[in-house]
Image (cartoon, rainbow, N blue to C red; front, side, top):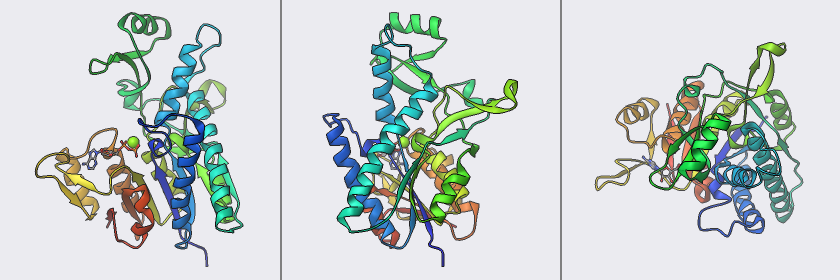
Amino acid sequence: MEKPIAVIAFGGNAILDKGDDGSFETQLEKAKTACREMLSILHKGYDICLVHGNGPQVGNLLIQFEKARDIIPVPPLDVAVASSQGLLGHMLEVSMRSVLAEDNMEKDVACILTQVVVDSEDPSFKNPTKPIGPFFTKKDAECLMEKQGWKMVEDAGRGWRRVVASPEPKKIVEADSILNLLDNEFIVIACGGGGIPVVRDYGNKGCYKGVAAVIDKDMGGELLAEDCGADVLFLLTAVEHVAINFGKPDEKWLDSLTPDEARKYIGEGHFAPGSMLPKVEAAVEFAESAPGRSALITLLEKAKDGVAGKTGTAIHQ
Ligand code: ADP
Ligand code: MG
């Protein structure tokens, strides 16, 4: 019988976080730790597909590009996302192969550079809100807004920052390739950073072209989980549970939620946009996409216990 499939999304912070030294050695060590956790889900009987976030990594790339602007042309944002898929995919593949060897397991690993189609009419293009990349002085920001046509905002006294659209992912271009690899029992790394955003180019036979946007990795992961007929969607992050009244004296951590309950809490504004909100939205969408599907939001290091229903916030019908 075919094994159930688990799609496992986790934050780029799991590999590179604020207090870290930022070196690739440290990132690789943390990637190995993450892969051990992923492997423990595989040991519970699942085929696994990993979706990594890329916030800190793509942020660093954008700083590097900006610092070298005078000597090397700055690539467009879709190329930065693609570069982050390459660097994280490589680190995760190396790490996964090494932890497989620790467990004496013969299993293949493949990373798929993944493009995700978005609608060029998505409302977020008219009102971009996702801050990315370096902070600039007001003077430099004014120059960039004029010369590059960027939209920029002042970020809580820390400086000026570019904001881009975070459109809804519509279609994974390489979905069939990913499915094929899962069918052949590969461990797959795909849809990194939510996917490289592309739109249809009607001037060129409807082929795809990159677009300046970033896709939320929880939403990209959800689409991927639906496409590959996954049974479970893990959304692994820095908190063990989802809370209502988060950070307030009457904070309450939740063990399980139905999609209806989650929607009610979303309406009451319990989840921060851009962080917990997309996770809960992705979980609801997945839980409702077919009978028997469930999503689990929990800590990376608790994922394997979550399979047994011992930790985290489960969202199912
Ligand atoms: P990731 O990089 O894993 O996507 P994010 O920082 O985007 O992580 O989102 C997870 C964070 O959301 C948690 O670490 C927590 O600080 C924050 N958060 C916001 N609202 C809530 C909530 N209602 N319950 C739990 N955590 C919340
Ligand atoms: Mg996030």
